[in-house]
Length: 215
Image (cartoon, rainbow, N blue to C red; front, side):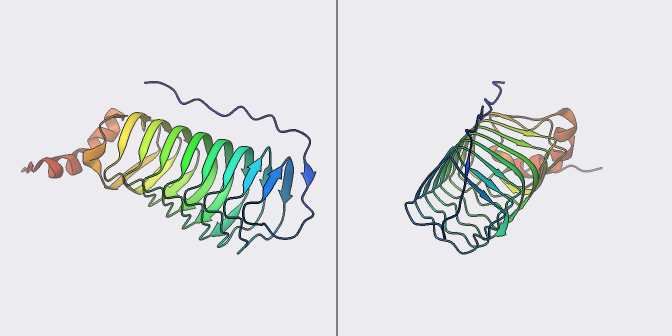
């Protein structure tokens, strides 16, 4: 197994954001967004470089195709945030409370998701490389059709995950505290699981193979 490479963030001294709402294709460099209500804001295609977004509301925020580079998102919350087609590189997402986040087609590279809870995360057809989910809870995350390379789930609960049609390489599931696979158990080639997880997945694997287990 090749371990995931983690981001090495060294944020510069940040300037507090005092502007109005986010702007489509906006360019934000060295800015801290703290304790703001960004619900419903439209930042489609915006670029965030060396930024921090702390304790902000992101309900229904439009951030499709946005780029987050060398940035931290901490304590953000919201439902229906649109990050479809977004790019996250060298990013830490810490203690988030999110629901229904749209990240289909997104690209994540050297990203750590630490703590918090994300419900119904849509990562369909996304590309994840060097990503670590750590100490968080993911409820019904959707990875269908995604490509995962060097992805680790550490002390992380995966509930009702959809792995349909995924392509996995060096994906480490051994330290997941919960591993509930709703769909796609047949697509686990390229992943590593523990003996205990294999035992728990045995009924689903037998069903996928058409094997009946009779007492």
